[in-house]
Length: 152
Image (cartoon, rainbow, N blue to C red; front, side, top):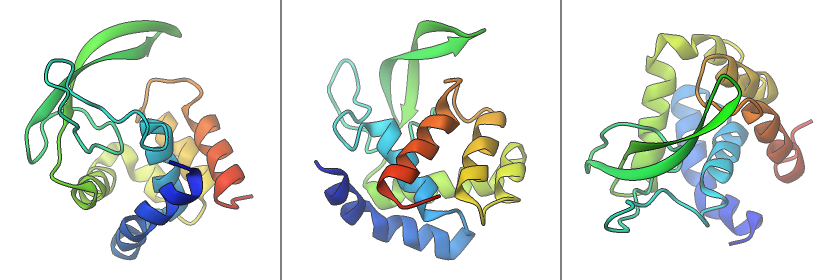
């Protein structure tokens, strides 16, 4: 899938969430692109191959349960392989809605929501709030937003 096709497919979901929460469309699309490799490597159960439809790689139990995956995490700057459970969804709309509930509802992301008018600042606040363990997470999001979504 090309980045253009990806954006065309997922933009309506991101725009709905933006209208409801103010979370920047660009940040949601960039996160989904980064987390899924533009839908080329979605989280699938390592035993059954079931696709989680989890666009944001949120861990835990989702509306349709979870999938088990081996993932790379960063601990003290070092890559570590771990087995983890990721939320599973019925469709992409549900994945977007759950992501929005997490970001808006968790106190740890209040600093990101405080700068929701600035997608670049939002990316850095997500990283500093611990959304992902990758030390280059925000840098990668900003790069995607600048290259594919016209964010300056």
